[in-house]
Amino acid sequence: MNKRVNRKAVVLSAIATTVALVGIGAATLLANPSPADAGPAVNPSQ
Image 1 (tube, one colour):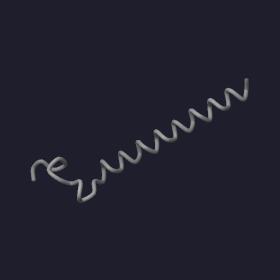
Image 2 (tube, one colour):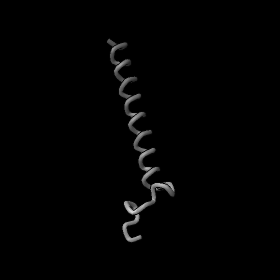
Image 3 (cartoon, rainbow, N blue to C red):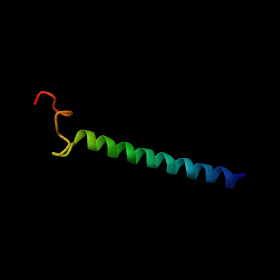
């Protein structure tokens, strides 16, 4: 029983870590767009 609970906890932890890393990566890309991405979609006024 303990092994199953621990295994599930490890899987959930790994999923949570992956989601967090992807979220941080997406937030970083949105906060700091590269010059190639900073186009009309990012700056409609230009």
